[in-house]
Length: 432
Image 1 (spheres, rainbow, N blue to C red):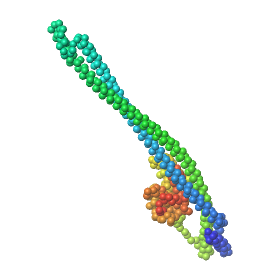
Image 2 (spheres, rainbow, N blue to C red):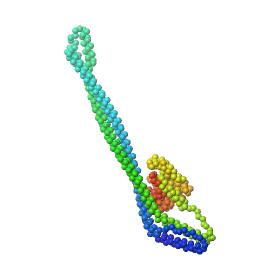
Image 3 (tube, rainbow, N blue to C red):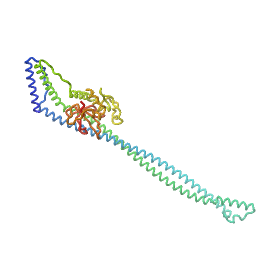
Image 4 (cartoon, one colour):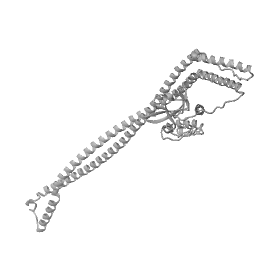
């Protein structure tokens, strides 16, 4: 810095001396007053402070990126818990249906068992009635005593017919009774088994419902925590961006002042040289043409002119910001489809349209739109890119002094930020 200070003073002395010489030869030299020029110690102190603040801004930017990643993770966790709750509710309905069918089976078996019990009671009554009747008559079915006492052939025939009927029906009641008993035992067993199934299904249904209630409450709690965290992140992000702007202003203050002074020196040197040439050549004026650096300045100026314009996914063209489009995800959640603004590649399209360059609206294609140069050789007007797993997903415009202008993400605005080297592609693309 001391050598630079000496050079500045030398140029100033040369300019004053040359102006005096030209004035003595009657050639007018328009010498504007110099802008303020900080001392070397002020510049050194300012640069040290700027570097410290730039480091602070970089850390704040990384913290914001980490906070936004945590926000996305919380959102994914909420969605997973909601899916758990949905599964538990489905399981609950299935268990309730199974329990209902089991109870119906138990009720049907119980009704059949009750019917079998009634059949047993009826068979026992018939048997009791037949036995009582046989006892009163003093006869036993199938024995000769049943025929003794017949008073006539007709009476004997009637007794034969009666005993045949009894042996064909009432006597079979004993076998029916045994079958009814067996059937009732089987039905009772089925009824008990069906009831056990019903109780088990009911228990499973209650457990599933409890699981559903717990999962749903966990999901709701996570959702409430996520919403609170999201609001905290929004407030923190606003504060970070404010600190970022303040840091950038402080970082750029003395450097801008020195750049203006150096530009004045350069302009003054050209003016002095022009005056000297005019004095020697009788007023001839050399001509100059546009350069790549001038075109880069046009591109940078157009990009910076959009500072503060909202981010809108899919927005921006060569004429300026446009309405965003739907992406079915993050951009939609921020309402980008209803905003007028730029996404990262849309901002580049607008910036380069100022020098007649038509870029595609995709950062991956923009990476191939010019000559690739190492990051160590990047210059103002170059494009910088970031990738994940080899896929380019973001582009920004390098403007010098390790700064860039970008449209970063949904919910943000076009801004100037320090170059982020995490995830950056190993080259810059030089379009001009």
